[in-house]
Image 1 (cartoon, rainbow over the protein chains, first blue to last red):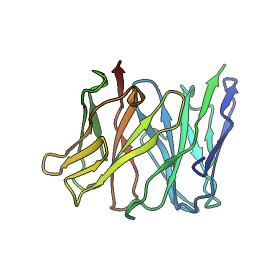
Image 2 (cartoon, rainbow over the protein chains, first blue to last red):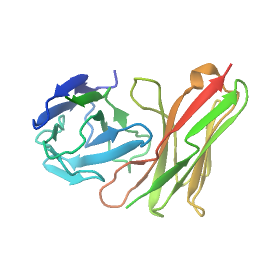
Image 3 (spheres, one colour):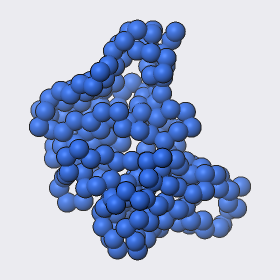
Image 4 (cartoon, rainbow over the protein chains, first blue to last red):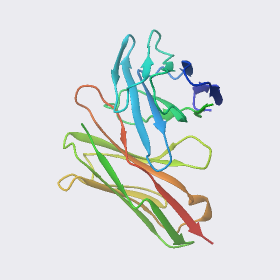
Length: 115
Length: 113
């Protein structure tokens, strides 16, 4: 199944609550990424991490937070400050993109709905 | 930062005909250009990629061309089949500093039987 697992597949949250999306990989990849997918807007980068204990903001980081305490794990927290959190969230991982014959693998996604 | 534009947003072709999707990028340092296919309700999956030391790469019915001078690259699908119907995304990445993949907005390809 690609070795990268997101959970849960569907998530419902009440307004004002924080929620954490899980992403785990067993591919020994250095880099991990979080994308948000909305209809007609493609994949927009939220946060990414090249190594453990280091991460960078992507294009739409406001209202989100991440941690990278372990190489295998890159959880994403959607905070109450995110004004429009309902979306499909995709996690991906890869070796450093400098490396020949490497690619980014995606998890199956988490669909978050705020009710 | 990098900006990737993708056209068209929707494309319908008769089965057996060819389909072409085009992308442009802004960062001249970008040197890795993958294409992903996403079927309905599924994760994006890599179908082909090209690095900036080559101008064209082919894999059976799929080919990608790259023009670094003009900063654009294209996906070509020949002899299209119904199973080619999906959303296709292009992306670009540089290898300077922190590498990240920047995606285009996607093309919904529909193959008409």
